Amino acid sequence: MSNLPLIKKLGDKNLIKTFEMLKSNDITLVMSAFYPQRGSILNEYAKYGGKAVISGGLEGQQIFPYVPQFGLEYETTGIEETPQRLKEIVCALPKWLTGNVGLCVEAPLGNNLWSKNLTQHLTDANLVGTNEQNLRSYFEEKMNLVSILQKAGLGKYIIPQTLVSQPQSSEHLKQIYDDFKSEDGKLVVQNCGPGVNESGGGYSTIIVSSYEAFADLFKEQTQGIKKVATYIKGCNSNLSFCAGNLLPNKAGLGAAKGQLQEDDSLYAPSTIDALLQRGEELGLTQENTFSVVAPSTLKVVGDKNLSHSETSGVGNIINYHFASEISSQIYEIGNKLGSLMALCGKVGLAGVDLIITKEGQVFINEINDRQQGTTETTSINCENNNVPGLVHIAFLQNFSDMTDYSNYLFMKQLKENSKQIYEEMDKQQNSSPFYIKLLGKDENVFSSINLSSGVYCLEKLDSGEYQWQFDTKLNSQEDTEGSYPLINLNCNFNAISLDGIDLSEGQFIPVGTQIGRICGEAQVGSEPFVIDEEGNSILNPEWIPIIKALDQQATCQLTPLTNQNGETMLLDESLDFIATP
Image 1 (cartoon, rainbow, N blue to C red):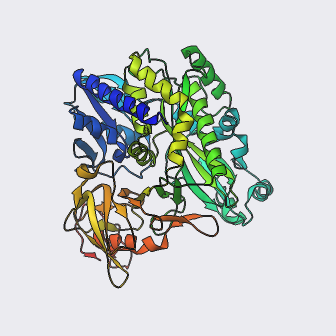
Image 2 (cartoon, helix red, strand yellow):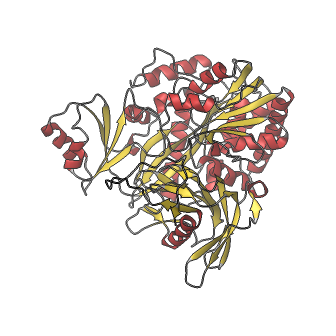
Image 3 (spheres, rainbow, N blue to C red):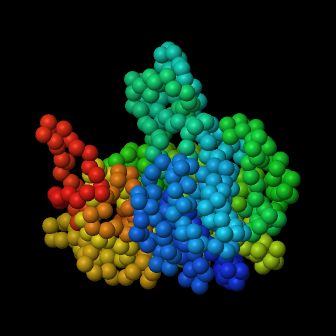
């Protein structure tokens, strides 16, 4: 008999105990984020009666029903994650926020900038806990990927790649292209090294299909380094895990944490050895560190029906079942990489982007030392199946009292049952939870209606087209949080959840902005994503008219204005224009 339900019960008890501890100490949980949609744990705390606030997103948004949100004049999702933008998000927090605060971030941005800006902005607040670490600056640096994976014992999953500096001779460039191009002549090129800002979502990735296109990237004689990798044809996948340990953090709440030091190079393979040495000094060993791995998802990247970019992720099926030989490789990757990061003092959520070929070979595309877009839905799926979810585990690792034996015992049980947790979820044969990102994919697009999060009816017409019923909500997001309607496209009516949405009529939707998500659970045959005959993950053709109907009903595209010379005028989103559907 599985003991996972008992472990989850202990985790649930400890979560409430931690909420009560934070509440009794009058600690306000604060989330400053480019993607405020990932703040569900704050909503749980607020529902319990604790105080929580979010900064980020667009001014006037209220993504979570229990959490006040302080947005900006521009949408923060999908923009370049620069230190200046980070500072602006933090400064959206009201100055009246005082007393004890705990900082929750979904994605650190170098040198603990969230914490530093928070303490500078909220001068009367006392930062008593944070999940922020500066390790992301090293683990996500593309120059370090090969050395990190080799150190973790994952060399067989490395994509053939090299680092290229400028300037390069044409002969040398041609040799690099010939050495690393795929069978159909494709290469993947990413900027890396000093001066490159951390960002997610594939926005900085370029795919070239010829030597001429590859050489064009090097025409400008600018300083910088490019990672050049073979283009791997196959389906995409997101793997999430939580790294942690059993030791109390002597400097605050949660477990013991490692950090980069000022003299650590972000671009040297030897830095991983310095991090491991520092972990030893904290007392971290194989016996008191762990990695909890969730089954990998089926991810779709760059589908033209959902995004303007061929490299941006557009959604995932959470409960996808890969063949057993693939599944075992995925667990090995999450366990070995998470264990290595835990020995370095990493505490909390991280993940990996994977590519799986038609032949079943698994490759690691990149490391994501942060909460991924899939993490929350994956965690909800685990919780709904009586298995501890990653979001709750990470929260307890960062904000619980680790000197409390019950918290120590819970983490110890997670360590001893990590593989069982993975296998229990991997064998689930129930319906498939999913999400589809709604991204701004065209120029000059505005919202044509007021639209908020909730469950709406989708009707299939006799013509085969679809109609969304936006006039009436079936349920609010508050009523359906943690569970989603079951979708069967063979039926004429389906209930579908729109999450993280707060659009106002006339609101400008920049290209690349994440508007929200379509969420649900799909019966077999109704999944929004499938693997085609070539082994690529794509949007299910049966879902194309559903997405088209949503675009037509919820947005409109402005007719570009021209001046007397016939030149196109730049649109000013602060002005009113006559829109054409």
